Image (cartoon, rainbow, N blue to C red; front, top):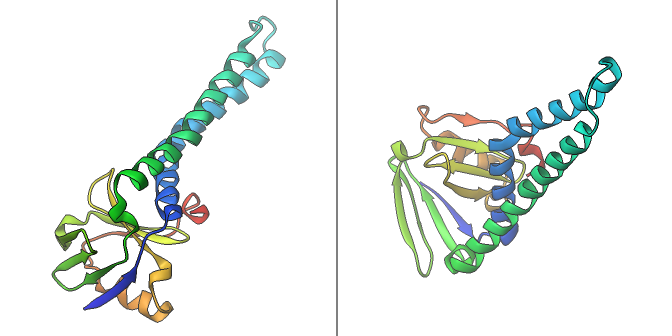
Length: 171
């Protein structure tokens, strides 16, 4: 059995929200920037391209950037204020059967089959129970890299562990 102690910080919740949002919306940003690039180059290549297309594309990029920039912050702030148990000092125990946790106001248990995947970021491991919900295990909870490696070996082989991605490096 592996036991981790500590408390989440607001920055852990905020990083998760931004990581999750960018991971899910990266394709939309790619399409938007592709459109923006096309709008930029089309008037040069095509002689009868309508005026003002670039302004519309820039406006759409600005709106998208604002939504992607503000929504994770608002969601993290709401979670942090409405669920004070997130900030409580607690313990998470990992065993062959699953994982359990407790803090002064919350006790929970998951069997390993309930965990769909593990995503590694620069500062944490995210144990996804669904596409929208994950348990955050900050890397600072591990005493050293050997403890982190022991923990990774505890996770059943049936659960995919995704390494740090391009987006995950920032979080």
